[in-house]
Length: 249
Image (cartoon, rainbow, N blue to C red):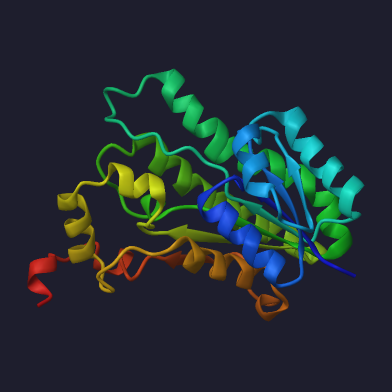
């Protein structure tokens, strides 16, 4: 039977790249995004998909994601919690409304959608992959809400693995480092790009496809004994967190 994945935040970036890789590997994909217009454009021409313009941070929508996926494809084998907002600002400039906006999508959305999916994942002994970030592992300026939300996602993943393993459900997290997305390239100055290149052992940004490769591996039978793990897909960025780039030469 053809396997089915749910990918949230599927209208662009890592989510869309993951969707396309799943399709290339013979999966069916429920594409979820709250941007209905962008989602419709992304899904156009992708056979084996269904577009679900829903909001993962809304408890009612999270339930609908699972119900509409099973109505269309009959089962859920993998849930990729990729939807997120990247809102950066200083601690003093982050009011509670801004904090909650980030948490509601980046953390609440992962909790709600995963919880809604558990009954279906029990049937298939499926898996969950949560998209965290290198910002959840190492502090940085302007990331008080974003980084904290992603650190919580990493711990939530371990909680899921610990509790759901007895049902055959695996849960893992992927922490991307700097990725060459259209958004990043639009806002990163040349100075920022150069600084990242200096700090990353592989001396470059990652690509959306490189992140998707790891996500799909974790959802595959090749990762059947992998659960509760965090994989940083960051070109070695985390490993250099306490060193000065200038001293590496």
